[in-house]
Image 1 (cartoon, helix red, strand yellow):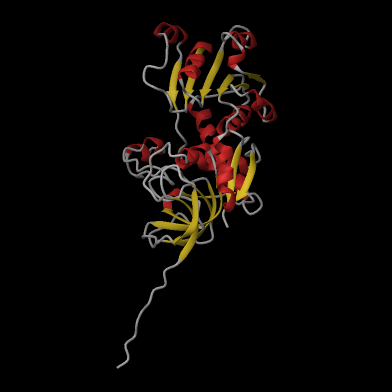
Image 2 (cartoon, one colour):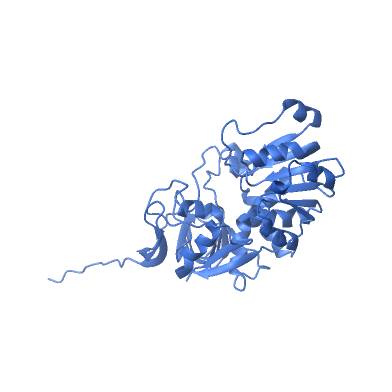
Length: 357
């Protein structure tokens, strides 16, 4: 009697894997992602290499190991589950970083960053894009507009979903408008550089603030009107001199430590808005006098990442030619360690990215 055996071949892919806290990437074969009915799999073309994922690489953010990091992508849909309708095989896509429920009151009102059932982050709670293929809930894949040449510029297109979308959200959240004076603290960083671009897109006057004066040439290149290193001054008078004694309409703080937040409060104008994005504030670190906030009618707000619609709007904004991401270092997967060392040491101007192949 002849017995037929059904053998399913296990597919593998190449990936950069973090095996344990603070250890180098391991370039190895791993199992191809297997999707469920509500998921999709994409072939990764490029992935941004920013400070957010370097915090994971360096062990400063807790994850379960082994883990594949990376979330800023240019990719092409390869497979979809049977219930998926928002993307199709062959679509060029980027990704939404947050894992959200899609049905709470915040998600239903297009404010996914406040999701009541927040599930974490792509590349932390689930594997990310430092691999040939990535599986996500299909709703986390967002189509790239046809006007964007992702084949020619995969690295630049990949970083839009964070480097442009996060500042775009700040523009809306803080109601930045023409003739506002905007001080960007941490202006020389990857997000700071793009915040300058977006503030100039909003027709505001931009003060680039950083303690690394060697970043100021790049800040000027993307549109900063003036650059100030606060450690070159004994007080905040340089800001009042530049604004003719009025102070700054909007302070955007990507550092958000004791020093930066106290500086931000001290330079706010009447009706000023302070936006914190850094997330590194120790308790009781900030000295803000209630009388000053009251008399100035100042507003203090947090802003985290962007909504799905803001990512879509950012893609369209770039497709129109209004702004263009600044990516200055692109490597292949074999150079991931060298690239992350540069990110760690703040040696990258704008953004960096890996080509996945």
